[in-house]
Image 1: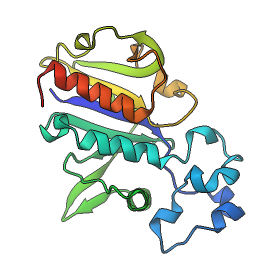
Image 2 (image 1 turned 120 degrees about the horizontal axis):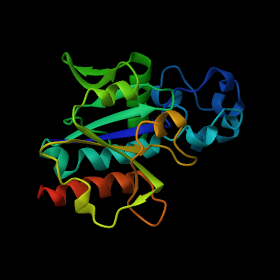
Image 3 (image 1 turned 30 degrees about the vertical axis):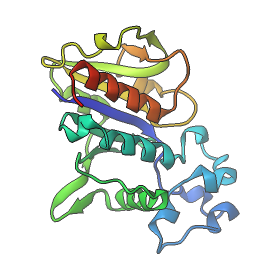
Length: 224
């Protein structure tokens, strides 16, 4: 069975109305340019301090690098990766494995802003990024006989990566990885699994975790 990765609480959202009149926002925003409508702490940090949970928001770059790594992996090219992104605003999207994410960051921001405005990304009637209704709990419940791992530096240390995915022919393995820079998973996310794992003695960036989890799965099942 394919590996299922969920990038949870990604810092992807349109610029909130309450800060749109801030000078740092007005300086760059344009209704004609999609990318300028996406919250980005590199541009809007001084305005974002007024927002709740601001330390987890405005980081489309994290999702960008994670998607580049995941979609470019042998696991994905082999047809054995299912990938979802879940935003800080509780929107869920399924990523088409054939989606070619723009390497250029501003083009990626434009794609995500268009996604959040239009609700999906489609070409010729086929979804490249598909909206998923419901909650993460409801999404996970659709996968029968699943093993859900929550990646956390506070989780149980994994000494032998081969122990993680031994029963891939019988189980749906779901790995939830935080798509934010700082802070911790919300209680809602934490409650999705009591099986928290740590793959390093060090706190790791999200894209490193994505890389390592995918590599572990590839090595265990000889996908290259």
